Image (cartoon, rainbow, N blue to C red; front, side, top):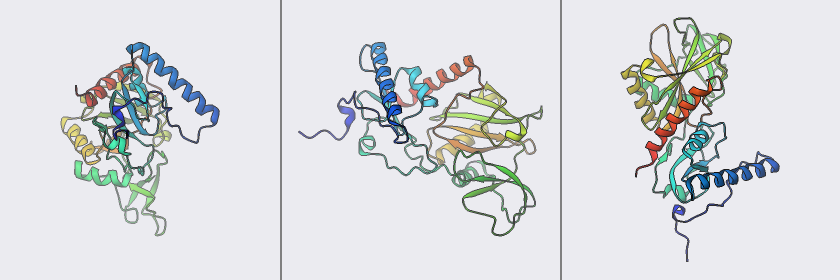
Length: 305
């Protein structure tokens, strides 16, 4: 008898999780053992097979937000077919997602988050930003008079640097983007990034990430606070972010948002659909509050019954 196409209709509880070949053999064995032990704990907690959330193709690190959310919900997080699946998320840690979703996910009768989120290059973000906000960040590096920012077009490089424009011919490359300098300083002259959480149309909270000037283009922070979205973003700005995420076909991600102290406008400079977090500098109580809120929102996004 042929096995049905949709594997969510049968049980594969003990299929090992698929791990990257970059891990050594001892690391892979250790991770498999920890996954089995975690599953046993969840089975005891639920008095039976636990609910499942599938991340594909990459299995999220324990430092990832998704891993912590599933732990809070008491769901098994795997990248293999299972029964009792609550939802699926494309979780591919790459700027351009090249792997097509397999048939067993394509035919799944459950919500699939970030299914069409396959291109998070900064050039793509710029196009969508102009459409959603009516303005963007890009400048012509060969003609721009004054300072400008050079960044890699690839996501999560944190390699931005400020240079004097205009740039000479031959120094401009399509592997980089060239943007206006955003003076994202608050009233106390601190460099401030807004890390905005987005889950299926809901912005549960944001993080205030204060940075030293020499670290403004890095992932390092001097201080992090949990904040209410409505205290930092106007209703029109929230609507613009929603339009941006719809254009980006992204249901779950974290956004790096900067507010320019000169023109008062916000700029979404990065979209990360595979985030780690909450930020390390956030105190433990607020970090747990953030995880609980995101867990509630993810459950609402995928559980329809």
